[in-house]
Image (tube, rainbow, N blue to C red; front, top):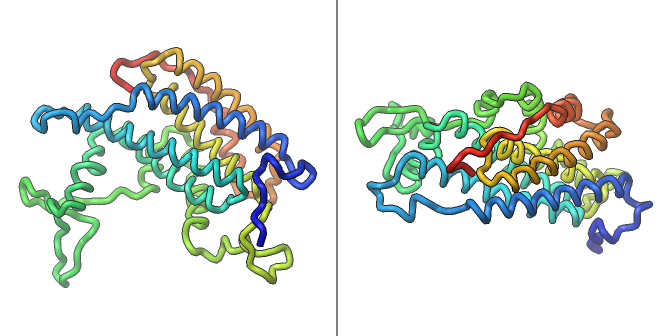
Length: 295
């Protein structure tokens, strides 16, 4: 089958809401460029540039948060590229990774000591420096680890649902109940998502479709606003001029998202997803004063 052209070249009359989605896309691209400038200025690796005995907790914390932000930024770019070329399901598969990164970053920022779960403990298991205990029936207990320092058995593993419980916004918590399972359906070989790969007559599998082409743009834009809120309204980036630009751009992006979602066909959407997303976007955020030595 012939591959479809990009969103830029497909005629307007073929794509519903094309003008709105292009406006949204342009706002996303501009915000990503500001995000990139921030990461270029502040994305320095600290731990690997110091002697091991001189690495402090703040260094580990900073490196991990930046790793999460850099990884998320690159994935946002990839997701946008796929969405622009009508690979909407694949774009949303990447969005799951981005959303999981967001949950982890938020969780670690709120409970800093948990950074050791994603660094010391996870790396220790990967390098066979930390092991899982064996149960009485001889099975590895992968939800537990043996502390090499004292031999104690400790719990291991943090689920996404558990981390989502620590979100501050009640709308984010409510949205997680539908949004995350929805993204998982696209990631796994789940038959509930198979309709995305069938024609309108449901008698043939296809891989190039325009149906729901706008979904990844909306969800990508939403996730991007969450990251920018985290940077500008929660932790206070040290570059105030850049923070102001990102904060202002986020307001425009949110406004465009709310406008589109308010006209969204709610009968075809996931129950509660659109409403919770709109309410989260409408939550008032304030630009936080810059905090030294932060992202």
